[in-house]
Amino acid sequence: MSEKPLADLARSPSCADDYDPNSMSVEKARDYIKRYLSPVSETETLPVRESLGRILAASIISPANVPNHDNSAMDGYAVRTADSQENGETRLKIVGTAYAGQPWAGSLEAGECVRIMTGAVIPAGADAVIMQERVVQEGDTMRHAEQPRAGSNIRRAGEDLREGEIVLPQGHLMHSADLGLIASLGIGEVSAYRRLKVAFFSTGDELASVGQALQAGQIYDSNRYTLHGMLTRMGVEIMDLGAIKDDPQVLEQVLTQAANEADVVITSGGVSVGEADYMKQLLQKLGSVLFWKIAMKPGRPLAYGKIGAAHYFGLPGNPVAVMVTFYQFVREALLVMMGQASPPPLPMLQAICVEEIRKAKGRTEFQRGILFADEDGTWKVKTTGAQGSGMLSSMSRANCFIVLDEDTGSLPAHQLVRVQLLEGII
Ligand code: AMP
Ligand code: MG
Image 1 (spheres, rainbow, N blue to C red):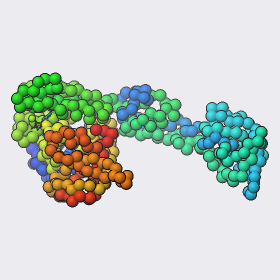
Image 2 (image 1 turned 120 degrees about the vertical axis):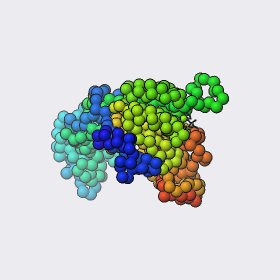
Image 3 (image 1 turned 90 degrees about the vertical axis):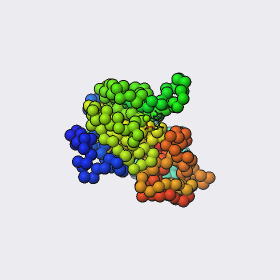
Image 4 (image 1 turned 180 degrees about the vertical axis):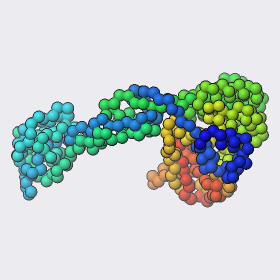
């Protein structure tokens, strides 16, 4: 969709029938954000190792079969299945040895076999490998009582990848296995989208930075630290613009600078009911930004829009709400902008919650949870305890969110609940 509808929506929220900024479901907010995202288009060529965590701008096509020869899956003997006696022992002459990287050049005749190592090319004439533990060797002969089937213990040429096959599609997020997979094709460089630039800052008169002494009523700014961690894990280029006072002039200057220099601007604080008015005015002047009240806990206030060409996310100030809204809205949006058209969602599974859960209907809750293995080795979940949206320790102890739908109310202990995994990314 073009930018116009966003500007319209920001100016007069009533212009869309099914759009109520004061009661947005999590799903609907996600859908709206998705409509306006634009991926980066610039690409760069990178050595394979440097592409970890990056998104492919072009598919990787296999230039050859992998493996490129039929080869042995075992240390043993390459044989002709036609030579095997149906009942009783088969005696074969050992006519050579095939090593990985050093093929045996001949061709097997009736009554012959070749000693073969794992990874060695299957000699011409052979159609099976018998593992060495099943064989008795006596000088230059061996005997066995096997009835090997054609192809047994042989890794076929092209069984991993076929020549011309798309090995990894454009838009793929590179994992460790992919580095090896690409190397296995003999490819040394890949085309990736350039890194997304994300600028962020905290807002609030009450914020002090680490290293400063706290004055009366001040708190330390923790949101810039959690954002630093989450954004770094996502592999974007980060610009930390500090903690900014609730001063419209300074905010305007920092927001303008951020939007000019970055693809995405993220702020925390200043979008809650008491504070939204001047942020609203300021963002209306600088761009097209939607202010929402989301039916979720924590993370009710959220702003999303554009300032110039930059995408803007106004996250709540509460430290837990910052992390929850990041994982529920920002993460997926960043992946799309990084070049992944349909990013896979965070893994969601079901587990028995060993405790009762208190919850009001009418909003989605993301309670902080600990997924653990009980004495029987069954995975269960419990909450981290008190769930205040300012209590960052609850997030620090968690390895998952317990996701409770709008329609769900309080639950007794031992109910099946949905669990969104955070392990590995938090
Ligand atoms: P706000 O959304 O600005 O009204 O902030 C909501 C709550 O989050 C207030 O208690 C703020 O003091 C707190 N808060 C806002 N920004 C930060 C921050 N960067 N670090 C820690 N707490 C914050
Ligand atoms: Mg504030």
